[in-house]
Image (cartoon, one colour):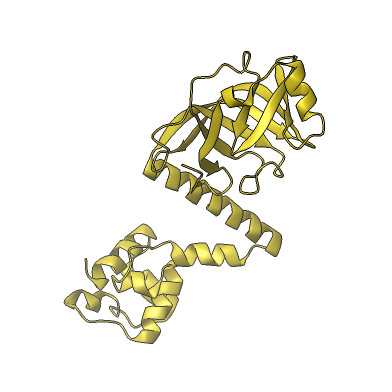
Length: 240
C-alpha cells in the first residue's frame, strides 16, 4: 500500500471527496489526486494531512500500521490527571490479563490458609480454585496454601500462593506436629475446622509436646518449593 492508497482510504472513510478535502485544507484543485503517480508530500503537507485525519505521519508514510495512535493521544490529553491515572491503571490491568492468556494457565486448588501470630500457626481449611500461569508451575507439590499476614514469610505477601511439598503423605487431623522450613510446630487443638500449632520458640512448646506424647522425629517435614506472587503474577523459587 502506497502513501496515496492510505490517503485514498482515509478520504473514502471520511465520506468526503478529494476536492472537498482540498477545499477544506486550502489546497489547489487536484493537489491530492496527483499523489497517485507516486509523488511524496512535503513535510508540512504531510503533517497537515495527518492532523486532518487524526493519524500519525508514520501511518501515512507506511512506517506504522497504528492509525489510532494520534487519535488516542488527543483524547488522552483532554483528560484531567485523575482520569488519566484511571486510564493507565485500566491499561495495565488489561496488559496483565493479556500476558496471562498468552502464556497459558493452570487451575490449582488452595486447600488452606495459614496465619502466624506470636509463635502460633493457625491453619484454616479452604477449597478455592485459582488460575496461575503455567510456565513455571513446580513439577511436584502436595499442597497450595495462602498466607494471611505478611509477617509469616518475609518473601510472601497476603494473597500469595505457597506451593508446599512434604517428605511423606500426611493427614493434618492425625499428626502431632510438623516441621516447616526447619521450624517445629506441635499441635494443640482442633476447633471449628481450624488447626492450631505452637512454634518451637514458644515457652510452652515442651509442655504441649509432653501432653500430646508427640515425637518430633516423626514430624513430617515441609518445604516451600515455589511462591506465586498474585499481585505481580510472578514466580519465586522456594527451597527445593
